[in-house]
Amino acid sequence: MHLHGRTALLTGASQGLGLALAFALARRGARLALVARREAPLHAAVRALRDEGFEAHALVGDVGDKLQSHRIAGAAAALLGPVDLLVHNASTLGPVPLRPLLDTDCESLDEALAVNVVGPFRLTKIVAGSMALRGDGTVLFVSSDAAVEAYPTWGAYGLSKAAADHMARIWAAELQGTNVTVASLDPGEMDTALHAAAMPDADRSALARPDAVARAIVDALADGRITTGARHTLSQLAVSR
Ligand SMILES: NC(=O)c1ccc[n+]([C@@H]2O[C@H](COP(=O)([O-])OP(=O)(O)OC[C@H]3O[C@@H](n4cnc5c(N)ncnc54)[C@H](OP(=O)(O)O)[C@@H]3O)[C@@H](O)[C@H]2O)c1
Image (cartoon, rainbow, N blue to C red; front, side, top):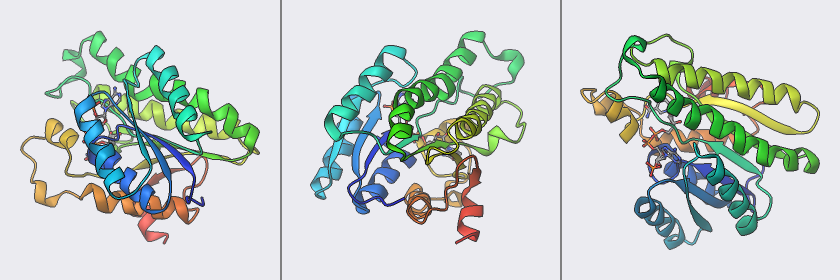
């Protein structure tokens, strides 16, 4: 995917992998709309991007909220024009500390599904029609190995990520022939706030830096190594380079 001058809507982009992706995409010339719930960190992220001369806009909102999703997508289109790249990066772990399914409230599961599955579904639905009509666009779901492995206590997160992976495959199958790419990508373990909340005792020095992961993802996007219908892992992308 040629990225120069292209428009990207990134959710969960005020910190961690999302912010690192924003910088990596901006360095390739992409024009950005960044989404997160907390205003101050999001505005700080946008300021940091603009300070380097990049185009970035802050869209404060919760991707798990139906009404806000429509406002987010409308604002992105108004500020940037049609969205060429949509990255579903925002995610919730569900209840923290992580706990077994037996101790998980239905409400907590609802929340994980709202943010990690229904929100991405809604945003994809809003932008994918226009992508298909234009015959161009990419939708990337940020996944996790918890979508594949049945890790005890990771239930709400893991099952929601598995559903999102499968949703990506179905979108890809239904959009076959439109030149719209829909894929998911497991970035591996990174030193971020989400990881610290899930595993507070982890050795942070053993974790990947989000900047390095983001560069590898954006290189893969730019080189056309993100293929529709696929569930990529960062290690597989690095090997196929
Ligand atoms: N870190 C890892 O080891 C790891 C491993 C595998 C997969 N992943 C995946 O990588 C992605 C990025 O994770 P991360 O580790 O970078 O997380 P992070 O540092 O916790 O950042 C999460 C970002 O998402 C935003 N966010 C959270 N809930 C949101 C909502 N409902 N609506 C809009 N924005 C929301 C947060 O800002 P606000 O709180 O202000 O909304 C923040 O900008 C996630 O999809 C995660 O599942 C991470």
